[in-house]
Length: 195
Length: 195
DNA sequence: TGCCTTGTTGGCAGTTAATGCCAAGTAGGC
DNA sequence: GCCTACTTGGCATTAACTGCCAACAAGGCA
Image 1 (cartoon, rainbow over the protein chains, first blue to last red):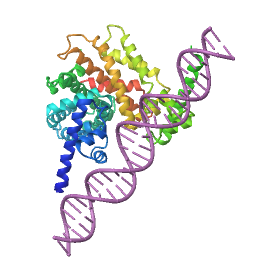
Image 2: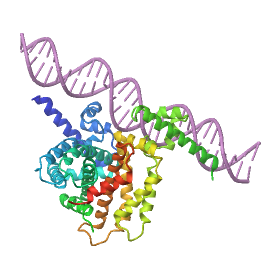
Image 3: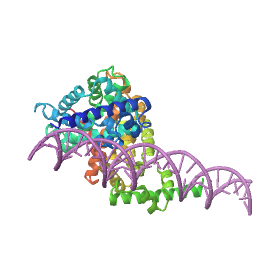
């Protein structure tokens, strides 16, 4: 354990993150400069960029870790489970592993209200999607469609993420008062149920 | 008609676009600077930014026009047609209105391979989605789901775009040898058909 | 305890995309 | 031919990044 270095790093990261989120909420994302965040967090601009490669990572940074968790969770679902149910189980785990709802709400609003942030957020999610495709592909019965199983998996994963995204947006719009998992189920039903 | 201005503008835009796409293909997007494009297209950097607000617009620029066309097309579908079919009709019109397939393929590859470009592309598509939601909402039968019709429309539009995106990516991966509309139908079937 | 290796920090200069401003030029109406 | 309207290009500036280097702190080792 590289104890002190490790620990002071954690402290610095948290301080930067808190400062950044506060300033973004107060002044808006575009109006807040890296210089200001660094100044108020008591760190040099250069070091801030070492912790967070880009300004967007201050908001979307921990997505990397969640993506890994999501993939592992989906993989570990019982073999008989359908692709849809496995993905839904993964989504559920992410929900509980996420920030406290108060901050998650704040971050979601920030992301959905700031085009460049939303774009970056979607881009990170696209990487999750790519990693999930082989996992889902393994779960598909092989007689079900004309489409190559790989493409079929791609479409299913993309649709699930579209529902996750839509549900999250609705959730943020309603200030978190509606259960996110419920919203997801309803979005999926709107897409998959005919008639 | 503001003839000469209008015409020379068209010429300039086309020259810039050709130069840019060529350089992007040769050296990659990130490695090509605005200064180089301006120099080789014989225009000042300042004017280039007047024609195309951002570097990304050199690739994703004409999306604006397509979004407008998409919305109008979907609106004009017969009243009895389902939301899904209306969206599919819109998609089909866009396909025919797009660039010649050779260039469309090149642009698609560029977009899918360049994270910052893909982010911007997604951002534009999200704007199309937002504009389509009220149009689709008007087309929904009101007894079909627990979800508020607005949310239902949002989910459907998001899912359709997920399929469009997936189909386009597959199409680019197969060098345009598979029909894009077919791919779309198959993606949608993979998502909507149960069993 | 005192050194030495190793990894961290901060400042500085430089690059690139993007924006505002102003002076110079050019098309088109009179 | 002149005047107005609009466009163009150069200049300065900002903000996000990146590379480089010198100062420094942590932890191991004698």
